[in-house]
Amino acid sequence: MTTPHPHQRGKLIVFEGGEGCGKTTQLEKIEAWLIESGWWEKLTHQGFTRRLTTREPGGTDLCQGIRQILLTPQAETMTSTTELLLYAADRAQHVEGCLRPALEAGALVLCDRYTDSTVAYQGYGRGLDLGLIDQLNGIATGGLKSDLTLWLDLDVEIGLGRAKERGKRDRIEEADITFHRRLRQGFAALAEAEGDRVVRIDASQDLGAVTAAIVAVLDQRFRQWA
Ligand code: T5A
Image 1 (spheres, helix red, strand yellow):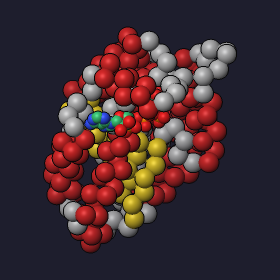
Image 2 (tube, helix red, strand yellow):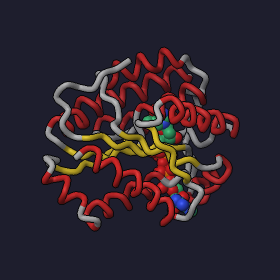
Image 3 (cartoon, helix red, strand yellow):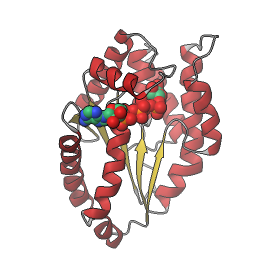
Image 4 (cartoon, helix red, strand yellow):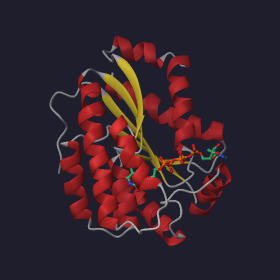
């Protein structure tokens, strides 16, 4: 069990989901909506100092190198443990070098993937021990949890189809379909266990409807945080 960092003033909102679920597209739409809706102005009056958009893996210069190793298909098969430790290393660097300083300075952070991806992909997908993953997430983050995770839930075949259309597949996308089905169950289990922190969004709708569903959740959350 992790506890929030005592000096955290900002908020961490994470976009999660399986392959091709549309979270990167939605994150960009939400950045624009924050300004257009007037919410960002209101949030600055409440003490938020700046906005930051970032991602895992690859959120800092050093993390870019780790991302490259993680996602590039290679002749030598990467073991699941190596994969887990590389995501943890990426996260440790990202939290200390980027997320924690930003949050302590009062930022509203939008992050493309975070700890819930490790539970879903390495835990449910690869079948690694969930207790070990919790421990490792705790070490890598020093207890920094998302304030809100938006899980964009989409049928696995549709998501992989979208990802395929977009171009060359990375090392993780190449895994077999049952892996992707298991990780979807992982996100479902997280939403079930931590319903206030992990909120399911139906990502099978058209772009505008998905954005509207996310906006409804954020509207409500921002009011709670005020
Ligand atoms: N990973 C990550 C782990 O295994 N463990 C971990 O701990 C972490 C942090 C990261 C990989 O690493 C794994 C997960 C990933 O496999 P990545 O390159 O960051 O790799 O890739 P993804 O996170 O999968 O993100 P992508 O940017 O590739 O895909 P998105 O964000 O799911 O989708 P997006 O927005 O790019 O959209 C995909 C396509 O669908 C279309 C878009 O236009 C785009 O072409 N689209 C829609 N089409 C129809 N209707 C909609 N509603 C649509 N929304 C989007």
